[in-house]
Amino acid sequence: MKTLDDCRVAIDAIDTELLELLNKRMKVVERVGEIKADTGGAIYRPEREKAIIERLTKLSQEENGILNRAAIEAIFLEIFAVSRNLELPERIAYLGPEGSFTHQAAESRFGAMSEYLSLNSIESVFKTIEAGRAKFGVVPIENSRDGIVGETLDLLSKSSMKIVSELYMPIHVAFATKAHKLEDIKKIYSKDKGFGQCRDFLSEHGFNDIEHIPVESTAKAAILAAEDESAAAICSHIAAKLYGVPVLFENIEDESENTTRFIILSDFKNGMSDDDKTSILVRLKDAVEAGALVHFLQDFDEEKINLSKIESRPSIDKDGGFGYWFYIDFYGHIDEERIKKVIDKHASEVTWLGSYAKGEN
Image 1 (spheres, rainbow, N blue to C red):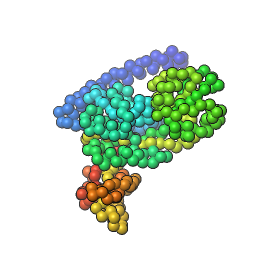
Image 2: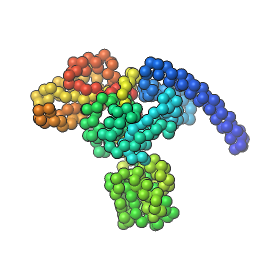
Image 3: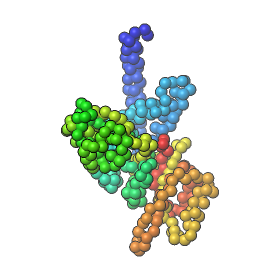
Image 4: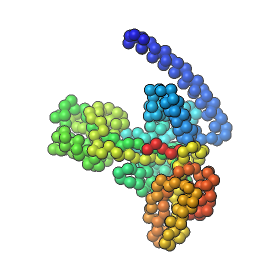
């Protein structure tokens, strides 16, 4: 290929081959959907999707391919999302508003073709999937800076829904505006925390002396900035794109290491993969006795089960007494014999919340 036109002809030919192969894949997918409809199998299989991405990443590395894991994941997650919608159209409930980081997390897993339902509280997401008005729910469970999301844990303790997947998403914010010049900006909208997280940026660009207007969400900030050319928004990239506000600066937060862990909720049980995580809630009968938690955790140690998280939450007993329960994440699947042995021993004290393919942090 000597010229740009030669390259374009080659790309067109490759795109034609890709389209033919994708159509072949989707025909197989349609058959998979028919089989699952007959057997009642779950449409979303995160452990299977993870295995495909890992296999393709290894194959690309062995062949010295240009595509790394991140690129392969970005391409194939969208292919998976289209495939699932051919099997069965999906509705996903998420903590809104539209353009929020939870919306961005949901789209990263379920793609552009799915139907999304924006809800104004985590409790509403739980109620919606429990009532069958959506198949999946996406909510935050913890943040690397702010810690655990207590409302999510409290609702998990009462819900019949299970965690079927997790994903970690870096939280980056953008500076978006329709102003033609920086000096034309007279006010900035953002969620209250947004201003605090971007102090260095605001100071460096002389924005400390103009009006800062806190609003209920970064998505709302983008909406308001879209309506006023003298305004700017500190918001998510997806909100800026959604509401047509050009991004002037990206990743303006003072600390780049800010990650939120999201969970996907539904009503089915995942099969085992080679790299699983399980979440449980524990209410110890003898929690008031010294060493009760230590004795409980010793059973995990004896079976060589590695814990990745333990979080205590206050609870009110039926008789009005004040106590605690524990949220625990550990590596492995609920169907593994060593794990079943421990869980069965404490069956009356443990609530299983889900086993799922471990997300990439």
